[in-house]
Amino acid sequence: MRCGVDGDGDVDVDGDAFPSTPGKLKTWSGGSSAISRHHVGVVHRCFASTSTLFLWALLLVALTASYLSFAGLVDTSSRYLLLSASWARGGVGGSARPGAHRGGRGLSVLVTGAAGFVGSHAALALRRRGDGVVGVDNFNAYYDPSLKRARGALLASHGVFVAEGDVADPGLLARLFGAAPFTHVLHLAAQAGVRYAMENPSSYVHSNVAALVALLEACRGAEPRPALVWASSSSVYGLNEKVPFAESDPTDRPASLYAATKKAGEAITHAYSHIYGISVTGLRFFTVYGPWGRPDMAYFAFTRNILQGKPITVYRGRGGVDLARDFTYIDDVVRGCLAALDTARRGERGPAQYRIYNLGNTAPVTVPRLVDLLEEHLGVRARRRVVDMPGNGDVPFTHADVARARADLGYRPRTNLDAGLKKFVKWYLSYYGYSSSSISGGRVGGGAGTTTTMTTTTPKNKQQQQQQKQNRSLR
Image: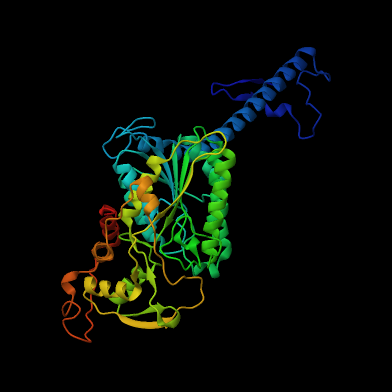
């Protein structure tokens, strides 16, 4: 029997010395029926070498498996660590970093719902002024996900990292908070829509309540403890008949499940602020509209149907009264969000800063007037179908009193509905590829009863179309 190590480092064993029957050894040619002590020693050394190599092989396998597992974690974590390169450098072309100051500010902000309507605008505004920004969004299919992807791509082109995941996932939040020492959180992720809540109530409880609690827990355990600014809603005023709505008005009669989840959010954030010393600012948005808006909202859906020659449904209230909304342009809302972030105090031990503000335009406009303005800017007459408002949780009117926001935040809305819709229509026609040169007829009013139509232009390919979308500014 021969046992040794060859030039490649492998154990070289003469296989003839090992019979097929376990426990027996062949005798050496030489006539002896017994194995000499020398031979036994050789065999022992051979087994020892084999066992050692086997153990080393097991160790190598274990190390390889551990490396692959760790590499997977590093690959995931590196995405969150790489974000520090984007937010720590501050805005586009800037050099701000956490702790640095720009005009007295130098924030590092986690924006939830960053691929959403308000979230994408807010994230870009923060980035442009030099703050550090990280986004997170679940890119759900409540409305066309391609629009959310386009917003996310636009943010990426400006150096804003957007992680994909559920804000209600504590593991995701732990990785995000572990990768960046956020000074502030702008929580804009939510399940929106009043009517949709009647069909999918659980999604509202999950996204608007459970996710908020998970985020508050992450803030509570973070060092430094970030200030939280989050999106409540004007819907919390529910069935109030007193107008305009002020922050001190009762909010105990929500008219929809969506409103109820937002009211619950206000109560929960107050408890966390009082018990754990988290600075909290709730912002009650009033019907936000503008470029890159939500396709489920009336002004967006009206625009789509008008251009496609489809009828639009215009609801009216009891007694034939026109519904009215305090339409608020996106830029005004974003300025309010940034002012809330800038004035939020850091967390404290014990009860901390807790604030609620209305962010509205203060000038309600009826829905029929909204349609009139869209007709004027599109140059297309709408096919209106007027029906009574169903009992679906909507309220007949909204009207914001912004005196508190004006005093504390310097909030002053600048854009009226006419000017804001003009900007929205310009974006809509560009984003969806409509050509103004294809309008037949003239402006609305040029001929009673006439309906003008618009055709779409087709880019050379989808990749080019997507690139065009990504290159456009949120403005």
